[in-house]
Image (cartoon, rainbow, N blue to C red; front, side, top):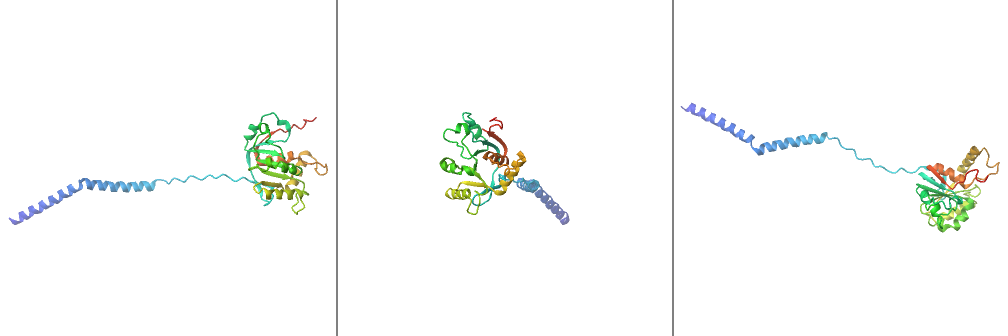
Length: 251
């Protein structure tokens, strides 16, 4: 009688254990934690599989190229300047009454010559802005006389002075060169550049190539308009010229 009883007790214990495992497996906390663990594991795998987005590249404005042959009066460093569109305004009186000032000022850079004015009622015809002013050695004194208009209120204007080598010598005997150094010392923020001797010789060669004449043999002088036009073609992608007369204007 004892053996069947023990056998029945063992069977009962097995049934109770099975029932306990069944209830534990179906309990909400057990299934929820298992699913959360599975979801976390899957989420980690998906996160690892996601490609990392590349950081956007920082765009920096490129520095303007150096224009060889135009040197700072003090440090002798080359001029760094570039313009997409330029208005080259001549010093003639052909623009008077034309009211082209607003159109001229719309260009990226406005180029003027010598002591050509922008104030005194001329702005409506020739504009207000000046980005670059090309000045001959013979016009330095006139520029100094009008320094309140041309120099003191110049802002970011770049000044390029040209002249014969005897006036631009750096050994203390160049009259124009000495005056320009003094000007820079008095007005340290002024952007003063000169045309180097090597660049002047290149201008002579260009003149001979374009006209067939040797400048020295023919005793010709290059005008400020010649220098300004050549500099503008180096400096600008596109040049609009204002007030320049036709070659046969005086014929």
